[in-house]
Length: 190
Image 1 (cartoon, rainbow, N blue to C red):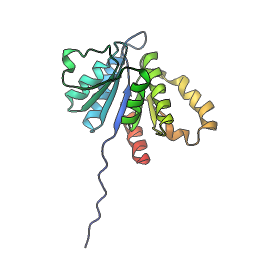
Image 2 (image 1 turned 90 degrees about the vertical axis):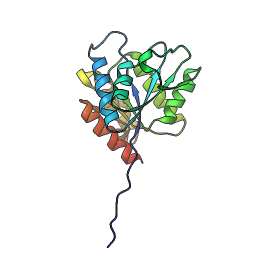
Image 3 (image 1 turned 180 degrees about the horizontal axis):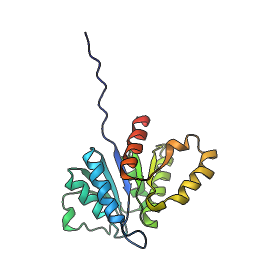
Image 4 (image 1 turned 135 degrees about the vertical axis):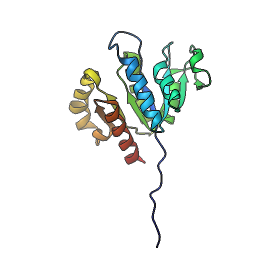
């Protein structure tokens, strides 16, 4: 009698785009902390982009406190605060280099409600990945309808022009739903 075992799949590497700078929802830092903890406890490796003095500190500190692996891709202006000593950081001079690096590392992209800078970085990375021939799913946390405009855009514009768009872009209402969607999409892609 032989027993067949399913091969274990490696936890995903997630590029998480988040910012608590600028106007907007006051609970963004809390959402980053929740996501960092939740993802780290499930074994996900987190890639964070840090540019223009904006570092998603709550995401990174929560993930590390939960035993997670975090890597920062940064511009030359970033100086890590003492709380982030020991975090792996790739410093790249140009934005294109940074976006390409994140695109190369990540299995999927997660967008938390944040600033225009984090949304711009998400879509820049998505475009860089497509240029490299690497299609990666995007899951956006639509908390308080933060990505409602993008949800409409996906349904109206992406659906006719991007076959399988529903596997490329999805929206979640909770951190748990976000994890469920992103882990399923990454598993399907592998």
